[in-house]
Picture 1 (cartoon, rainbow, N blue to C red):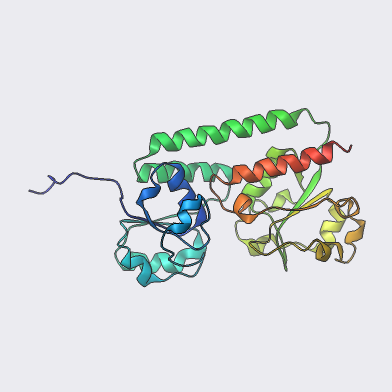
Picture 2: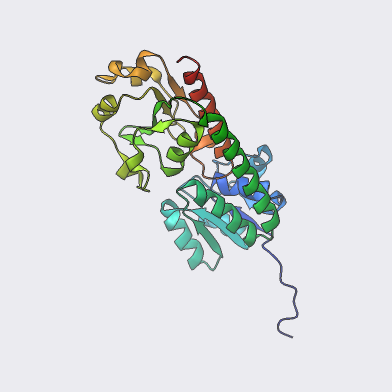
Length: 267
C-alpha cells in the first residue's frame, strides 16, 4: 500500500564541489558520497571516490552511472550541469553562498537534507566560537593593516565577500570593502593603479590554483611604491583554504590572523 515504505535520507550523494564534499564528510556521512569533483582534496579519503569532472566541466554519463539520489552543486557557474541533471530526473540541491553567514547557512541546509542537522549545528557553533576568539584577540590591537586580497592576477580581481569578511575577522582592513557585495568576479576587477593609490600594507594572493609569482607582483608599474611590496609582505594562501566556501575557510582565517599578527609585531 502507498505510504508503507520507510522514508530515508539520501544514501548516494554526488558532490560537484570541494566544499560540499568536505561538508558531507564533516557531518559524518562520507560513506554516502559516491562521486566527487577532481578539485576535492579534503578529507584525504575523499580523493579515493570516483571523479565526475572538474569545477565547471562534468561528465553527465559518469554522474548518471553512479545512480545518486542527491547531487550537491554550487552557484551559477554550474548551471549547465545542474540543468542537465534535473532534465535527467535527478534531485539536485544548488547553493549560492557568498558571505560567511551564507556558508554557515549552507552547512545547516545540507545537514538537514542528509539527516544530520544536529551535527551541522554543532559544526556551525564550533566555527562561530573560533571566529569569536579571533575577534577578541585582535580587538586589542591599536591598528589594523590595509590588506589587498587578489583572487586573480589578470585581470586583477579583488576577493569575494566571505574573503573580505575573513580579513576583517582576522584583524585587517580590506582596501576594497565596497566590492564585497558584488558576487560576480567580473564585477570585482580593479585597476592596478588604484591599488597603488590605496597603498596596502599586506598583499595576499590566491590565484585559483595557479602558483603565486611574487616577482610579477613586484614588477607591476608603480607597485614598488606600495608598503607591502617595500616591506616584502606578499603572501600566498592555498585556494582550498580560502576560496572553497565551506568549513575549510576557518583554516584561511587562521592564516590571515597569523599574517596580520606578524605585521602587528613589527609596529
